[in-house]
Structures are given as structure tokens and as C-alpha cells.
Image (cartoon, rainbow, N blue to C red; front, side):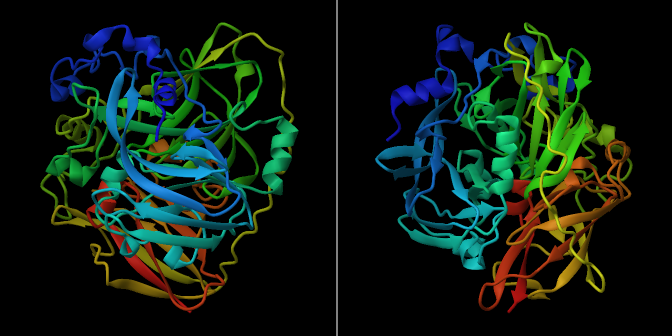
Length: 551
């Protein structure tokens, strides 16, 4: 059972509870506000206004909600419906993973385990609807992956048992229930899965990093709430097609979050846990973007540190960054901000392969915003987290020149596979297909190396494409829009988010992304996995295919 004290501490109730019931109100029409210059006027959780950022960031530490659980044996995980104070003083229905270890209770625990260790868990479904867990980014046999076909009904149980063969990194786990993923994940069924190895420990020692103190897992999400402060998820036909957007931005489930920092280097393990929102992240002091250093992507540490001032982060992607808070003086504030960008939502409500051909990106973006219930259009600028710099000893970190070794996939003689994203009959498609559970889109040979050329039509919208069971390396971006090409300084049109090992890649309209995949594995027999868009409404709408690795 969740303890009331833990929930109140997590939600930061004290900051706003004294305001009483009037603290939560909608002001004006969502549609008219989204198109007006000031979409959140008088809105207490407006993520644009810097003055609103007063809620203490929740940082995962011990047991309880989102506690760090060092896996030391088999787990019994139970999926339950509960309530949670996401907004100060407001309980909201929420879905949770419950488990215990060594006499301590956890809800949605951050699971931490050593690379090479065995992970064993049973999942009991205490929900009134089907569910299953997908271990996002982990290399597992198909039966352990959380394939939609593995979905269990109410009262059902699923047994997991696999070796964690991944290198150290920031992975995560979430529901993958057939046609229910978007709603269940939105209501809470997700958390981090951290893998440790020697590279991770060397980095932590070199930079004096401590999980929960200077090494901070940070999941970014956007939510909508009703007038009672309860989570709202009611996509219209248009929103089910384009993706559900929130208008309150949460960092570790904290709205308008602030974290005190001292003049030293912090590690932020950034996870985009949103259903559909893309973030263009930067650290900003006033209007000046500050340097930050990318040290890892989806599949762990990259080869060497790379300093940038911005990076896109799509749903399902992770970005491991170091930020030196000493770039500001004590008393100053720094914001982790999502900068404005062209959302390139070029598919119109008429659907078909041509979309709304006469309207360009920004015009279509405004039209899309007018059809969304969210006050915060995709591509709008807003704040995510305030870092309040306090006095302290100045600590300048000396970064290792090499973080890890990444062996490039050998692509000589690799088979080329065309992956074409499209739309038809109000559905987004992969190679002209919508998802059918018993249909295999194509076979690949175990041990084969393939190059997938993932192309997105100009009259499309951005799609974060995610593969199960394997990681890939981004080889090249072709035809990138200017806002992406401007940051592509890592060869072959690649951005910093493309480096290292990946399991999710954002493909923009008019763009082709070429990725190399090595289908070597040591699991017996044929293995069937899915490849899908991680815009979760797209996934549930059928933008997904099965592929089979032939044993």
C-alpha cells in the first residue's frame, strides 16, 4: 500500500494546498488559448512562465514511490490501480507497479542491476484490463520482450527470466498492452531500468557522481488534467491520429519543478516518457543557451564526450548529459527548456497519402494546434525544470577523453531494406501495412547484418521509430529539415542524439535515416519482435509490424 505521507511528500502538497480549491482552474477555451499569444494566462501550472517554477523536484532515493531498487533476487510485480497526487493537493487515478524486496515496499521502482546478471520477475495483473511489461532497450528473447501477443488478462500472471546482456546504460520499462499502451503508460505504467558496468563505475568515480544526489534520473512528460486535478486522457479522433499532447509539463512527475544545485557538474539521465511530445532541449540562463555535454544515448555511454547547446529528444529516447552548474553565479537560475521548433505536422485531417497539400509546416502547425485539446502546441517553447544555483565549493570536473568502446557494425555486403512510413485511411503505416498480431511483415536471418533505410514522406509528421530486441547504429541522415541539419556536425548528417547504440530514432518529414542492425543473438529458434512508432497513439493505431529473426 502507498503510504499517505510518502505520496504527500512526493507531490509537494504544501506549496499550493493552502490556496484551497480555487488553486486549480481552467481559464478560457483551450483552442482559443492555444492560438492566442498567452495560452496560460493566470494558469498556475503554466510551464512558460519562469515565476511558476516553485515545486521541489522529486528525486528518487530509497523505497516507496519510484524508489531505487537494487535487484538482488526474484521480484513479484503487481500491476494495480491506485491514486497519486500528481498536482499539489489533488489526488488522481494512477496505475502503478508494486513490488517488495528485503521487507521494503516500492511503487514503480527504478530497477538497478549489474550487466550480465539474471533478472527474474513475475507480473500479476490486478487491473480490470489486460497488460504486459516491455523492457525497453533490453536484448531479450522474444518471449521475455513484452510483445503485444504476450498481453495477459485481468488476474493473469506472466513469468520473466532473462540475462541482462546489455552494456551499462539508462533503459526503462513500460506497459505494452495490445492497443492499450498509450492510455496505460500515460496513467503511470513506466519507470527506469538502470544497468551498471565497469564503464559506468569509472565515470561515476572520475566525476564524483552519486545516484540521487548528483546523478539524477529525470523523466519528462506532458499531461492534461480536468477541473478536479485528475489526469485527463480523452483523445478525439484527430488526437488519436496525431498523438495526445498535455499542457502541464512534469519532471519526475513534478509540475513547475525546481532543484537547488551548487557550482559543480551534475549528470542528468533524460528520458522522454511522453506519449507524443518531442522536446528540443537546452540549458538557458536568461536568453543565453549554455553548453552541456552528452555522454550517452539510448544504449549507454558514447565513445567520447560531445559538447552541444541543444538536442532533440523524441518519445522513447534517452539522452545522458553532464551539466556544469558553475556556468552561473550563486543566486542565478538556469532553466532546462524546450526551445521552439517547427513541428512539421504536415498530415491534414483529410488523411490519405497527400495530407493537406496546400498548407506548409507552420500554417499546418497552427491548424493542428486549433484541433488539439492541449494549450501547449507541439513545437511551442516552455520550461521543464529550474536549476537554482546556491553557494558552494566550485568543483570543475575533468572528463575522461574516452567513455567507452563502441565497435562499428561491419556493413560490407549488408542487405539493404526499405522501410517506408506513410499514411492511409486515417492510419499511419509501415511499408503500407497496419498491425495484425499474426502477420509477419518480413524475415531476417539470425546473425545477418542489415541496413534499414527508414524514409518519411514530406507530407507526413515526425515519427520516433523503435525496434524491439536489438540495438542499431545510425549511419546517415538524408534530407533533414533545416532545424535538424543545423545541429548535424557528427558526420553523415547525424546529430548528437544519433551517436552510440540506439533503439529509437526520430525520422522527420522528408527525411531518410539509414541504420545498421546486427541480428546476432544466442536465443534458440525463431524470434518474433515488433518495430513501431513510439508516438504511442500511432502504435496503438497500428503503426507497427512484426519481423521474425529466423533461427
